[in-house]
Length: 348
Length: 276
Image (cartoon, rainbow over all chains, first blue to last red; front, side, top):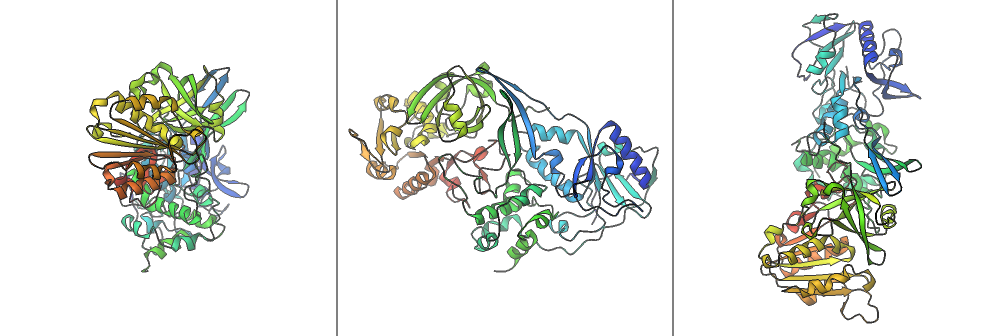
């Protein structure tokens, strides 16, 4: 079922109009869109419109592009980011902050990804203290969503409360039509970006996306009873603790902070993505290692996603999983989150 | 726009004391007093300390705010940041972020007897509790300190034992696993000392900090002696990178040690899904 907060304003545009619009956006702001990078699709800055890997394809020129390998999380919470610069001169220290303060528009964001941003908001924006870097990126960025006509082979957004045409968490939503696109202004910010005078307004509703059958996911309150299941040991036997699942996840948010040498007496304090799967993730000074077993670490990721995170951020009975399926695609040993969720629902 | 909560405040190292083998007490004067937060930090709170160029790490504040304008913390040389902190000279600038986390409910402890159990450098975050009680001696009942280390050369704050023992209604019991010549106190683990001292549970709260294995065994023994979970407090150590509830590293089940703790009663953490 399509969900939207839009006030009903929609427009019908052609591929040419979409391209002209994105081109004008890229002249005044930083435009980020899915793009081929060494054979992989990623959200990256584009300077020319023909660099875009079109999510729905380009009529007569290219076919639909798969969803980016990394989620849109990296635009708001980059894999590595500088927190401040450090200058050491003798006994004296000088610290200097530099914030990402430029207007950005991200095009082609799938509903699972925009939902991921909403989930990260609960921690970085809505739980004190506000993360000043994330907050600035969020405040400076407009999200142009792109509805999925159908779900991909590893997608399961509908089972975790999402939908392939869920427009709740974007500023503008684009739906594919026979002749081009239907553009819907969802937020005031989105409305501001639309060249309303140039586009043909419509009262049409977008076509409903094709969904696959949902499967039941254990409710938050059901998770504690599975904590001591031997299942986690069995499931973790093949886990390599490689952390790839966390890096591609739209909502995994763990990070590490460290200092990096830049030049003589000059350092950057940086933060970078990290993951609870790592064996030394919880190693204490002195050598005590928390969560030494792979099973404990694998379990923590699932519990965080479906129980802890909602408890910590006050999200209520919801999960931090958006059903994008990236962790399934990327796992080298076939740990499948949908299999785990269905196993837990099965009577013991 | 919001200020950067990961930005440290600068301070200057004004005094370094050797506390024990490879353990130093660093005393820092915060620039401009460190702002409002640093005027009134509470026993049990912690700070992130930066050795710039090497990184930052969390340390329990080792002094009571009422004892003067400095922030104290004990550093055992164990990794790159702690080595960097050991190598700082008096007069060097360093970064301090905080104070962070919750604190011991000293107001709730008023009128009660306290048993303070510190193991190794785990005693450092308990020193503010001891100092606070000594500085407000009339507000609290009997203070029994059980202090332990692997060997005498690893006992911390030895030069303050005389002050503690001289205070009214205050006892100090020492133990080490491996005694050296001339050791005139108990020998063995802190649990053995606890058994020997066998404090009454009447109107008494226990406060424990030390390595994870010590906390586990001591809290279990206290429970066996009849200390209710509500009357048995711990302050937990956890690997952290932000101290603000964001980086995800320090969770014990759904609790985050950095913002829900580091001080917990056993009523809060005794039955957690995940053990510390």
